[in-house]
Length: 264
Image (cartoon, rainbow, N blue to C red; front, side, top):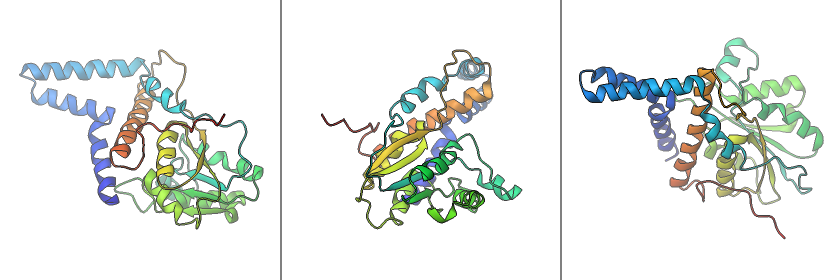
């Protein structure tokens, strides 16, 4: 079932991701160029790319995701450990160049030394394999292990390197922890990814405290950078689609997980 969900999610995203969708619309416009529908599809593609060229539409979709959970100013005294989700490492490039390579989500890892210094006695889990259909040989966990070795921190971190998505992060990390109910775990991931991550981990039986990093939204109203605008829109749309897919699949209890209400 997990394999089916993984492959279906990748196939669906290939079609509905904004950049691929505009390409498919353009393709069908050319196929039906002698019909009215062809003209309308071409107009849609041109307008869509025009908007993306100047307007950071992704900001509108990223902000509610990133604002759902705020980074706590004070952390509980009874933390059981720290969990860091993969996604900030470039596994294939790291293998090709024989040194750890990171992407714009690197804050997930960069915050780890400070947290480990602040909590020297807490266990730490990094969970991340490969989310690629074709490149399963390159694991994020291997990149992080090499980076931790270079920092002299490898002895404190348990590496889970087989997970392919957020649900498998939660399930396979549980195999490393005999008792998940000993206290809340600090959950570190990108701010836009935090609502889905919290919902998935809670559904899998974890107690977690959200520690969001890697914020992507900006205050820009006009930004003539089409590549960046499209990348942010892809990130936001993928996360909203992921929230819906995980909720419909029963991997979260609510569509848009929220912080627990504060006790009076």
